[in-house]
Amino acid sequence: MSYTEEIYERVVAQNPGEPEFHQAVKEVLDSLKLVIDANEEKYREASLLERLVEPERVISFKVPWVDDSGKIQVNKGYRVQFNSAIGPYKGGLRFHPSVNQGILKFLGFEQIFKNSLTGLPIGGGKGGSNFDPKGKSDREVMAFCQSFMTELSKYIGADQDVPAGDIGVGGREIGYLYGQYKRMRGLYEGVLTGKGLTWGGSLVRTQATGYGLVYILDAMLKEHDLELAGKTVLVSGSGNVAIYATEKAQQLGAKVVAMSDSNGYVYDPEGIKLDLVKEIKEVRRGRIKEYADMVPGAVYTEGKGIWNIKCDIALPCATQNELNLDDAKILKANGCFAVAEGANMPSTREATDFFLEEGILFLPGKASNAGGVGTSALEMCQNSMRLSWTFEEVDEKLQRMMNDIYIKISDAAKRYGVEGNYVTGANIAGFEKVANAMLAQGTAL
Ligand code: NDP
Ligand code: 2IT
Image (cartoon, rainbow, N blue to C red; front, side, top):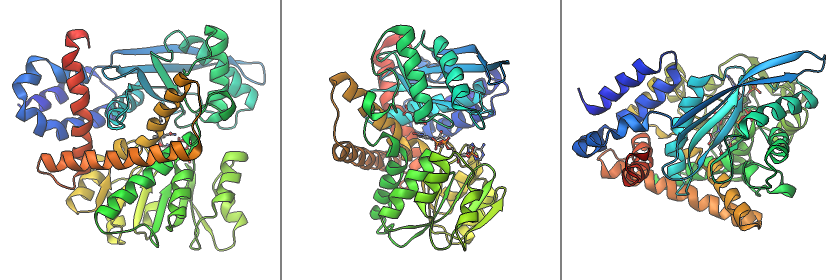
């Protein structure tokens, strides 16, 4: 059995009940087979893969808080500190009822390679809670965040571990979390990213994941003598990533015709009116269904099915495994020629393999959504320097970063003889830097 297969079996045996973690590890190990086979002795002798797939630390804690009726509620809280070979742990916090240890391990594992691809000194981590912010009052969200941070504050710090947002965690939550960190630790430091602009946040961080996704998509299309202008695009989700991916795609002349949330999707053949989506989602915290009530000609459909709409380009920006093999086949049959992942692991393994086999241009999330965490690292940098860059400065750095990532993953794929396979390219390019750092630091991690 090859070293990578051996490690995969070990991960499945030692991490029962964590299917998303197994899925993420399998994809990376399958890609790394080429590199590992070429350097098997070196990596086996160092037990490098055994070390890579084991988180340095998983912190699990209780989050008690009082709801508006005076009842005490209890949620689970976690922080997975996966790998600190190239920098302090860095990665978002997810608040969603589906959150469990396995999902956070998958996200933390992906984050190692993504953060490496940004070219900035950040290690991999992820955290969160099964708390559901939907339908909660601001006071309830604050009570939850304060309790969550009271415990988490013992384990994080500007040079140690720097959380940020993810599903269910945006500007409001980061504010409550930051206030409580300061109260617990007495430190005004860059311990969280995605902060408000008047208290240490960076311009462009709100837009960064979505903008970055479209910047790298644009770089890939140009390389293939294609362009975004005039193309019909589907964007799943209607949260932070989806909204700013739509904004940048529209700025570059594409027509986004559909967006979704966990209840259903809206199709607007005239092109999505993003100001309205922002009003519904960012201001009122409403449902995407309301869009169709307000826009004549727009149609709302309950349930999954956004991928059945005819398009040139698909941008899955909601959640893991939201696009399966059947969806991939329909996309292809309808003429879709490019897919770029805004979410983390939104395509199932079968869908990903189908895209690659069918020659559909495919950018994996760990490369294409790296602009968010990359801009978080720029926020950390500004916090350390105690200054703020302009929008244009940060946006230019983000564009350069996404172009560089495209070149890195494309070159790595070429080096290993799988030109155009950006999944393999991203996994290899992300891995090489982390592996070298781990080897250089001996048996410490
Ligand atoms: P938000 O909470 O802002 O938005 C999430 C969107 O996805 C909402 O429209 C939500 O619908 C939908 N969604 C969430 N869970 C599900 C589900 N189980 N089934 C169907 N739809 C779902 O999160 P973000 O936009 O920040 O995150 C979206 C994705 O992007 C995630 O995979 C995240 O890990 C990834 N990502 C985020 C980054 C960031 O900077 N924010 C950076 C890199 C990746 P509803 O409102 O109905 O729940
Ligand atoms: O998945 C991700 O990269 C994020 N949610 C952003 C993490 C960050 O630290 O900005």
